[in-house]
Length: 77
Image (cartoon, rainbow, N blue to C red; front, side, top):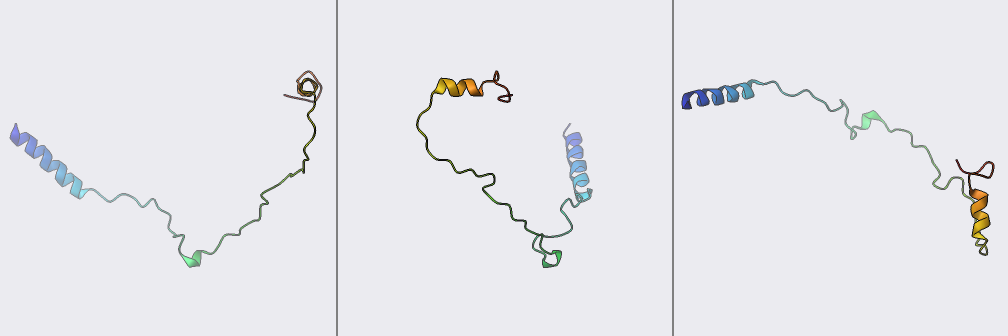
């Protein structure tokens, strides 16, 4: 039994040493390579669709809720 185990272990070691190297999965270029150039950076404003809002007095919450309920036309989903 020891001989069979030793033979199997030896064959695994030999097969492991004879295996080919894994394929190169990294891209062919390096981000640090200056010959690759620089991508254009586009400006995107941080605050789009900004609306200035002022504090208001408290309003009737029941009326506001009724206005935003799906029963009223154009509101809700």
